[in-house]
Amino acid sequence: MNRLEVKHLKKYYTSQKAVDDISFSLAPGSIFGLLGPNGAGKTTLLRMITGILFPDEGEIIFDGKKFDPDTDIAYIGYMPEEKGLYKKMQIGDQAIYLAQLKGLSKAAALESVKHWFVKFEMQSWWNKKVEDLSKGMQQKLQFVTTVLNDPKLIILDEPFSGLDPVNTNLIKDEIYKLAQNGSSIIFSTHRMEQVEEICDHIILVNKGQKILDGTVNGVKQQFKENMFAIGLESIPENISTPAFEVISNNRDHQLLLKIHEGYKPNDVLHYFLQQQVGINSFHEILPSLSEIFIKLVEGTPLTRQFQTVTA
Ligand SMILES: Nc1ncnc2c1ncn2[C@@H]1O[C@H](COP(=O)(O)OP(=O)(O)OP(=O)(O)O)[C@@H](O)[C@H]1O
Image (cartoon, rainbow, N blue to C red; front, top):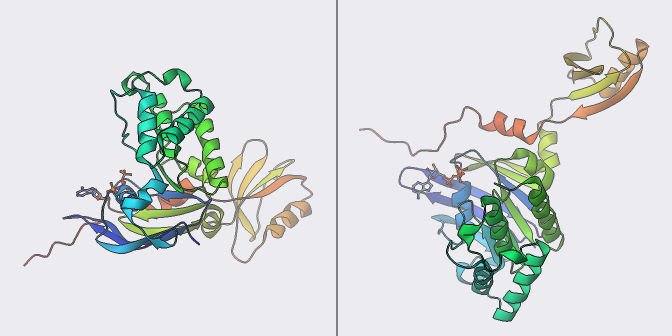
């Protein structure tokens, strides 16, 4: 059974189709990347999944049942991009309060907060106020308050913004552990290299519509362009063959090749062996998610506007 199913979701503002018929599903334990350019509709979509906004049309199924924000919100952890912590409240009390809001008893909330504060070495923050923390420290606290009640669905909007590499790794490792324990994670970011590293599945949204849906590897395979890198002992002066073309000649005797339609990687190896050139390495170059993203969304207008009818 899927953890979440989003079916034909729509949210229209006066002049914008912010979310325009989006469907996808999310399995338990999956780390799911929600990608899209600025204004694509990601935040609007996440706000519907977290019960902050009601959809105009469509359906959300959470754990096999129609999503009920009043009760299901206790099983969802949402870390929005704009942080929602009380600046003046003491950090320990605030974390306990937020855990209780998610349905934990006072004792369970205290136990969970202590567990996470020890794990993330935050014990000395207990009596401080949020306004006394740096941006990165606030980000770390926000992550902890998002996962305190062990949610089934965790939604993280730019969770690493402002974090140093050590704290980024700390949170990354926790995301993997939470997923291994069955939580489903939706991860929204503009940092494509983080998506490649962390997510198993992605959807790409543009102008309110889903334009790509698949596993990270599946999407890369779908957009591959028969590019290969080959390391040679020496580069022959003239390379002429119908099997491939040389795209670039990198340092360290590495060539980037594009194999032509109808030819195979073996034809490349065969060519250089025939030329009696030693081959040190040979591997396929798949496009990065960043390249795929740019290819699909570049040049498209920022938002999907209603057509204005002129008399
Ligand atoms: N309350 C609102 N009223 C009217 N239009 C809105 C409202 N909120 C968002 N929009 C519009 O809906 C579209 C989608 O916005 P949304 O915030 O969901 O995009 P996003 O993908 O989260 O963008 P970003 O990556 O910049 O955060 C945009 O065109 C935005 O201007």
